[in-house]
Image (cartoon, rainbow, N blue to C red):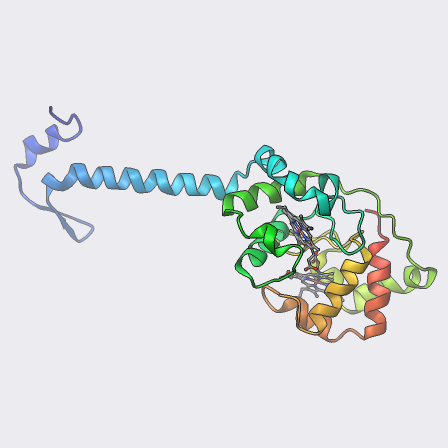
Length: 225
Ligand code: HEC
Ligand code: HEC
């Protein structure tokens, strides 16, 4: 059988090697080179697809494992367990990756990240990010409500987490997060016991007075945005 793409080339070139981008290419090898390039192209495109077009429906199905702890739709009702609903997708997938690889450890959470593939993580992240965050049930003290906004500016929390503390890209939404969880994470960053992907959050927490950490956690947990 003649290859429709190749036969015209063969006719005009005999079997002379030609130089293409400084590689010497024998035209007889062209069919396998084309097959190779097409295969690489298809693999590349399908890897892009799994990385960028996460499947919310698949995420929703997989999430049945998670809601026992993180609450329906990722709206945790347990002060020690973070809400996932409305969190940035990148925060969620990065956290899952850190748990799976063992950089971040928690006896309750780590086992549930062990068997997730990268595609599962992206799908779960897309699903929880798409869910609406429920209204916070935490009531901040009057003192925290008045001191919190100033402290969040003074310590640059708003620079990274955004003016409304709703997060962006890999920087988590913290507004309305569960109170006990928030405070534990802040203390963990300051003590360098909570995993930190780039060191930025640990340095941010290292300069915050312990009393101010308490006020910030109380203020931020009560935010409804
Ligand atoms: C047995 C309870 C439990 C189950 C089931 C569970 N988690 Fe968790 N998860 C936790 C706890 C507790 C934490 C907080 C860990 C810590 O303090 O670092 C957590 C933390 C997380 C975080 C980090 C959130 C953040 O803001 O940094 C993500 C993401 C997460 N879980 C996703 C999932 C997903 C997805 C599933 C299902 C595949 C799941 N969890 C199942 C208990 C659980
Ligand atoms: C220079 C940027 C930067 C500044 C300033 C900063 N953060 Fe963060 N913060 C981050 C990043 C990045 C993460 C994610 C860390 C990770 O999980 O690897 C994070 C994580 C957190 C978390 C954990 C959230 C979760 O879901 O687990 C809390 C809580 C938090 N920051 C609160 C604060 C507070 C309060 C301040 C101000 C005192 C602050 N941050 C200042 C970048 C910053």
